[in-house]
Image 1: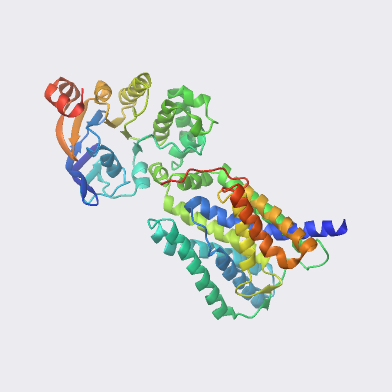
Image 2 (image 1 turned 135 degrees about the horizontal axis):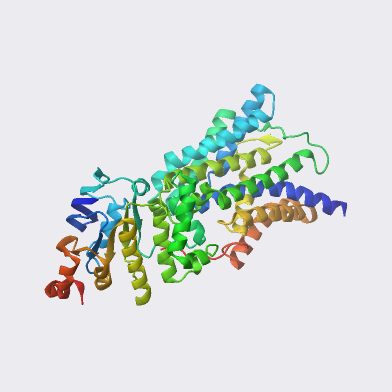
Length: 283
Length: 235
């Protein structure tokens, strides 16, 4: 019983990270129909900036803020300088470009901060099963997810962003600055991704630190439905708990395989995710 | 209000608009008629900034708006109801309407306009919380027109509002356009394949063929011109 509780709580903590990183993928996918494979690299650079700020100032929260700002800025730059130029090149080109960006940014991170693992602090001292750090991770992700949902559903900006995502041509005719909405979407997504990175990285940061987390986050997003924020949050937590059980009851070496097996199973049964609904493909 | 001069818009090698010129009178309803492929939709899309012309000029209220992005043009008071209405089916009726006036800063004016649109189209008021995908064809067209009115435009461009609608609903929509012109002094540019119903409310009419103007007359004269009617308008 004790083991079950421990595994559940641990699963919720890692699930929070998958949910946050998954949410950052969903925000961009909804707006552009592009899966942003560069997301872990954007989050990685942000976390490295936090690492440098932490070292320089000795405090945690200044680095935390710096990472979110860096994430937001990187997201905006990625959209403005790169993605915008690919808008009329079909669906595949932007996805491939984000993959390329992932490799470039990981290499750059290695050049600047070296490929060696460096120690990276938790938000709070890490003690016991459900530590303050774990509680913080779950709480902050739930708050951010709620904030994103309120933004989309209940604010004029969110209405504009949804309109620009669903029908960019019509949104333009209604006075919505569609390009600006895309920039805001990427900015928001990359800031959420940076937050996920800060929660996922400890105790060590290195250029590939977020790779496996990203695989799980992508699985969470696909399980939840790539254009469904609520489904992705739920998918993230469910996957976290499920993988924690696999690790605890079966064996930790099977975790990645289990994640991919769940992903494949969901895609076979419900191609639009457990919570998604089928959308006719625009030809 | 609208002056168009030698407008050329191309799709690859095809000249959809071929040195087209036209103008509209204020508080008038101008019909643009012609067969499929005459360039009617391209004309509206080029005016409202969805399409960039190769050459020529579009002037609105004396200001050159050629090549400006769509979101700037609508803010100048020129609203475009695209083909099939362009209702965003994933949003509710009210969200669609609010979207139309969201760029205006004056909140009170926005709220007043929303009530005005609901008064104009009572079926929309009854279904304000409904998903727009659940509306009938006629209700969607009302929503599209109401949403364009939310921006409080000086001029309205409409692309085939009668498309796919029952005759009775088409009559109702045409009456509403006539009332908007007579009561609010709205200038309307109405693209239609259904020439008969468009000319029943229009003041003037242009007939297009292959991207060029082949005739322009007062609406009554167009209706009286048998040769033109048979050749281009199909009735």
